Length: 212
Image 1 (tube, one colour):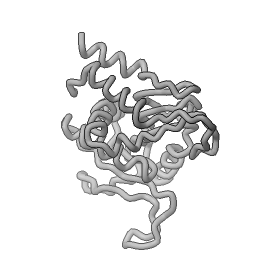
Image 2 (cartoon, one colour):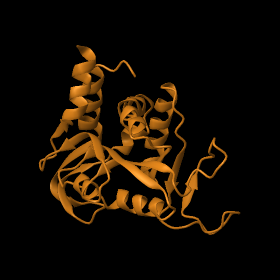
Image 3 (cartoon, rainbow, N blue to C red):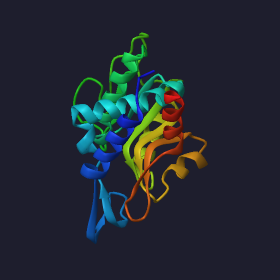
């Protein structure tokens, strides 16, 4: 496990609050179609080397514990995030190749009109194949629509989704969508209706236990 501390957790929390969450004077429309007085754009952190490293290190243990064999989600948001988690997992001795689901199937290349771009697999079979256990990761979950598209696309390939995990879950409760479908959902942080950020209790508990 990584030697992550309370200081590391609060460094990441402060970065999310400072750079990724913007409270608005007027409601703004979200990708989900709803409106909100705050906007969360965690991609600005997954594209930054230090914060991507922290996010990957905080998320990797839960992803590994899920028993998944690959990680991915919807393009473009998942790409940097999945790569950060994959790199952190490798430091822990676990190889987790990545994939992403395109909004529209590509119309060129030898694989035909595939909507899924995937890494090579070290076991000699396609990474995305029937029976493969996968985790879906998202930078921000609002109502869960984007991650659900990735879940359904990967399930259509015969894969088993063993975890959906996000950096931030907005107050709309998108994580409940996956739990109701029998898919475990985890997060690092969550927000209230005003956009205030909180550390997930399970994340805080793990840090507290590690520092005892």
